[in-house]
Image (cartoon, rainbow over all chains, first blue to last red; front, side):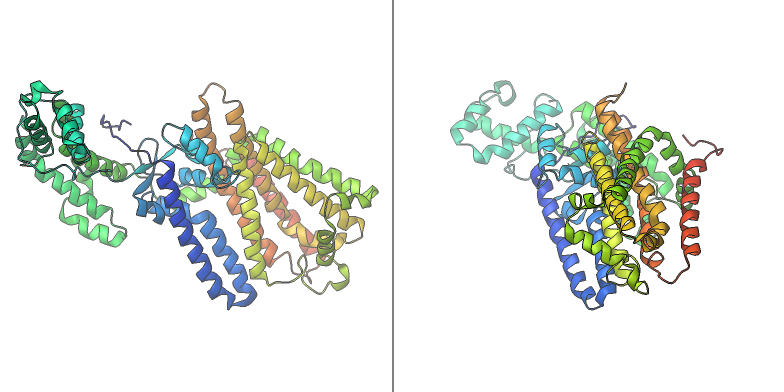
Length: 219
Length: 332
């Protein structure tokens, strides 16, 4: 996705599972609101019944639109899961797009339990459901999935040759996963980069971890 | 330039932008305007944002560390969300929409609208006419208990009671009409995405149902209370369902025959158009629910007033859809 400023922004589209979780949280909240309103309004007799149905209408149709437009693309469930609805070009959703994507839930819900929506989001490269395709919206992760915190702390080693971003990212990813690998496997991987580490075995692993730390800005 | 120097040089700018963004995106409006003054004024934001965009591009090009790039990415994305957020709706735009844009949109989709009207009114009129000659056919359309319910609602014998309902206060029925009718309108639109099938089904189904109910009640001589009840809200309600059906069908058409656009592009355009039409449908149905709950049920009103108001509403809404927004400059 490229912005008008000529910057390539990376948006991480959210898959079906976190979105289903967010929906479940929203559903629980909505159920609670409806339930509480039902109890309170039951005291008002038949007029309360009418108000209750109006509340039901609002909770069912208006709640997601209102939150998505006024709360930066986040319903309460999406906020809890760190998701956000944005237009395909990364801008915040407006009224029209939000209304479309939420009305289209009618179709995504078919034949039961969001069946069409699930199939669509599994088949689509950006895991959009039909509502998102028609509205031209995306559901993205707000936060970076891993805060680069899991890389082990070792003294940083300055890099002998400047590396492009993708290669830096690969070395950082190695450091983050180092704990999950056996020492033999770590050494085997580190031995693939003799020019960079100028060593072999355990020393090479330490060098790589040091490089990762320097890329991560630690000292 | 070394990364350290780069970071050192621009750190204050990034922190200022971060601070500004944090305060600008607070939920409460009053807090925003008060706090954001301290960092820099709103007018300086686009410039600051663009400078950070440039820093991000430099950092990516020069292969600075992943952490720095991630941080700048995050900053830029948040700035992007603020800079390109949709304008808040203003009263003038709303008036302009309902006065001119909505009728124009309806007319621009005249094929879908006429088709939608035909799909609802033809079955309705056919069945109404049919039931005058073969009244027993109603039993093959509606279950017996529903017929009994309908007859109870419009029985001329207890005409002092409220029209068109068995029980329940005005407010209760208002709620019922909002929940049911507006949901039907929304679903009629949305289900058009499945190659028009959902909209067509919904339109024909409603046409058949109305036709059967009206035809049966007229055939057994309950015509007068029926007309007295339905005439008031019939115009906004039926026209709203026709428009939502038309909006749904143009969505289906975009999928079936996108023309010279890609299917995705055609769908997005049809979706925007459909959503605007649905805003109008929503308002029409809200109005219809209001009329139905608080006006149509009044029993003592003379026929002349009831029919006059009904006719006036039909005329006014059709005139609005036909003439609204003509002559005014097209906003594109």
